[in-house]
Amino acid sequence: MQNAYWESDVPGPVPFEAIAEETWDQWFQTWMQQLESELPPAIGYELSIRLSDDGEIQQLNSQYRHQDKPTDVLSFAALEVEYPQIESISGEIPLYLGDIIISVDTAARQAEQQEHSVTVELAWLAAHGLLHLLGWDHPDEESLTRMLGQQETLLNAVGLAL
Image 1 (cartoon, rainbow, N blue to C red):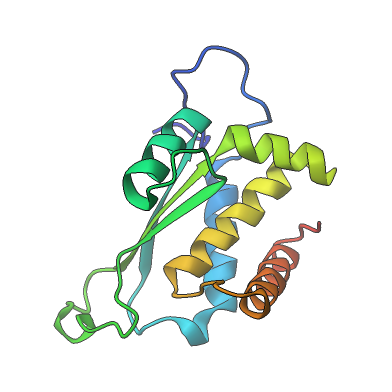
Image 2 (image 1 turned 180 degrees about the vertical axis):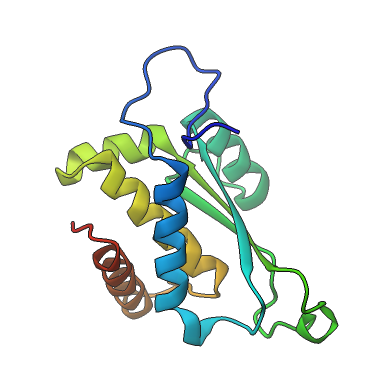
């Protein structure tokens, strides 16, 4: 495995400086500590993160959400809202939370529009995806505002600001 989270079959330069695996690990460890009260009990936690491009995320968005357009981040939670299978999970293996897929193409455009770095935008989207894995949702303006506030808190916890 490479030390950076970006591989692409798409020709052309990577639109940002690669983020080291250790940085991603540190971010998620910090965020998991911040969100400890929302986590089901386990000896550890696992998730996957994939940095993609607009073409791949559009295919996934079409297949799973029936929206045939690119999006910035998709999350596929492995747990049910009430964690029904927790009792049957061995205390010897980490709990798998799910998958986060982020379009680097969309992240780069959004970073430019928001006038911050692609690194900040990727962290923002990763935090958003993590919250979805933990059951957060934003069906209305109030819940979206709460979720965006939590994302900002998570970014601040790793020394990033919007």
